[in-house]
Length: 230
Length: 230
DNA sequence: ACGCTGTATCTTGTATACAAAATTCAGAAA
DNA sequence: TTTCTGAATTTTGTATACAAGATACAGCGT
Image (cartoon, rainbow over all chains, first blue to last red; front, side, top):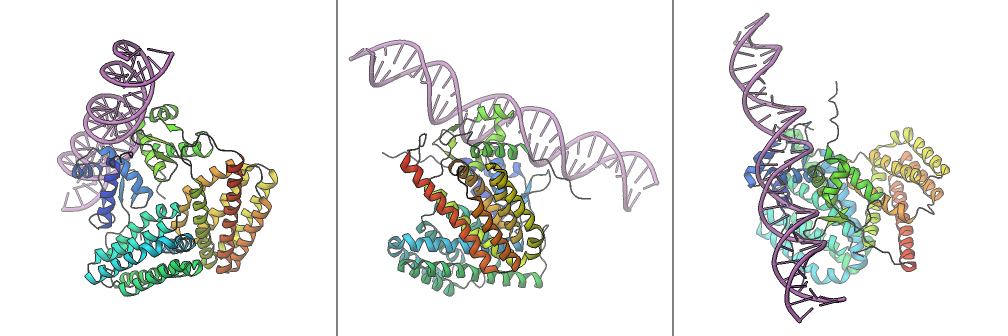
């Protein structure tokens, strides 16, 4: 018999709930997070909320405002750009390591993920496209057999999900994205580590460029409201 | 007038205290962390301890053991290697961005840091060498103007400090290290981004290789005790 | 003596309590 | 009417309380 999995504790559940609310835009940037109110909504005491907030603060989803608790953070343009830059090199690393010693798994399970991605794009549901995009990259992280990469980028994917959801819901270039995914997977299966790294990195840098364009465009067309930190 | 800095709260102090105890080896891997005992030692209630533990768990310094709280984690060889691999690409990124738009600051403040490092090595105190090593790399992170990099690697530096302290206290190749640091700084000052990236990356990869050798050597010569997770 | 079982003790996770700091707002003064 | 002041109310950070699960151990049977 295997040790049974303990059900995730309240702190974890509260953390996910708040984080997802932020990423879904239900909690707007700049909005103050009232512990009692959250506790009320989630039907738990303030204790797990406080603990979850420690994590959310550490990962940049909320930020302190003096001695008045925390508010939902607004990632600055520099931070968003920074996320992508970091993701680019880490995705590159993951792809390289995957090509070095994950070829078998890549060949067996990769095509299925590609197909699911293309399906999701045909379905036209943005949320589904984003999910399969994340699935693909998580798959590469797993292939890399480097346990550190996924842990490091996981929170950032949520941040990106948040930003992408609000910025490029309209024109998400799925065709290009999944062609690039396919190329990355091919390089991994072929065991061509330098090529896999280069492609994965350029893939993320492409996303970075597109996001930067979008943001610049949005910034010039309309000043955002409710923003304390530019 | 500027907003005055609020003194760091108990959670932060407790977090640092426990983390430093772990990195200094006062708390051995596998040792169970008793909340009440820690609270007693630090003269606070259990509450800040619990919150600090959430963070420590998230950053891999401690790990859960079923429903019996947490124990000090033992980074596996794969994780240690993973730290270095991640650091290599992130250091590369930081150096590249620093060369792109941090030349002025690098020229002004860099030499001082190099000198301090050489001094520390002459003094022969291991702790000082390690500190100035960390200082140099933090300097590069700051130069990069990418706020994400430093946040991401900060916990890892503590992990590395821990590992390095226990593994290569004896022969720390300071001469080579600071020559490489100097070369990296030169490339940044010259604004040669690709070169800066390559050098920084190779610098970290060199450290990774050395660490891997040491670990393999240590593993064959003597089985470690007190280790639950290999 | 050895192993099993049930109970006492300890430890954790969560809830509640409380004091200090921040915010709000009514009322006084200009 | 507007602005300032200070007391009432919120809200937070930390401490204490409590219930459920984990550990230790004594007492029983073999």
